[in-house]
Image (cartoon, rainbow, N blue to C red; front, side, top):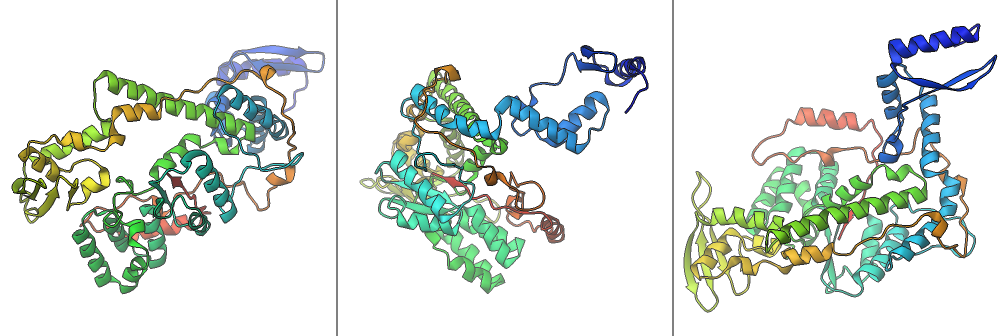
Length: 483
């Protein structure tokens, strides 16, 4: 927009400020041919407080506050400048990384940093899920976290590179530990092959059942409807994807949802320069630990013996136990049979409980490590405290010990030690090799749909239409890992 005179420009800005923008401004530069002003109370803090703040947010905020539709390119450049002011450039961020990681180690003893380079060399963050990257990750996990301990359970999807890396390491191979598959990923892969949402729902039910008889019944139903679907699931090791054959390793965890939650916590930082990514990851990890440490202290103050999760399950199963009928068999083995109450066509099922072995035929005690409703009924019959048989990892003290380690803040850059090497940013790493922006988040696909309830037939036409619409987008698999 051009103005004939400076006075005309001043009048137009003042009029726009009063009628539309409703913002105060001040003059930063004034001459015979130039008049420059800035908003007195500009919009600040969005980029710093929200790493996910994107171009669409810039456009919308400007629209809301000024009524002006800022061009996309202008919004892109302004956001780029704001990010560089807050987080620095990619070049400066890469150069800063060695000193920053050294400072984290200095102020937080025990911090481990592994560099994959020798001398002066460009470095990059692994952004692909390949066999070499998974192998390197599992090696670091084994060296710094597992440290020879046994009894570890790894839950992941069935990424070929990850499976190969797991097989080559000892930590998640019997007898040291086990590798299990995320049930949601199994169902998604199953549906991609069979293309039947009804069978997908049955697949989920089969994998999430704790009782072997119920698992077999659902598998028979799948076989009845589609032999190929049955063969697909039957070919997968049942210990890997079903709760009924798991042996108690999963502790009731069927999916990688917990790692998805961590991904959500760190979402938005992925697109930032590498030092900023590390800084935000540290800040949010500290916050994650702080919240749970405070939660643990609150449970201690309330004189809780078990965590909120365990208490909730104990109360729920205690209410169910009232309706059961128990028949004692062996006092030495503290065994008994429990019959559930009839509820319409359901109920009147018999379960065998052996307190001495801490097991019930329903499978829930073995899976969760918490006495089920049948076990609680038998414990009452034998005058035994069911709460005393809850696994130790539900103890409030164990919870507090998990989050007892504290983090120390990192001093300003003036106090950092000089590293004995430098990193040089390679701009070709970030070169765009295909049209459009790089994918920064996984687009939701059918794996994210809620499971249909048992007995309720889904609206196939609606779900198929939704799936077809999603197929027009780029879908990037986001493999997750949960230990």
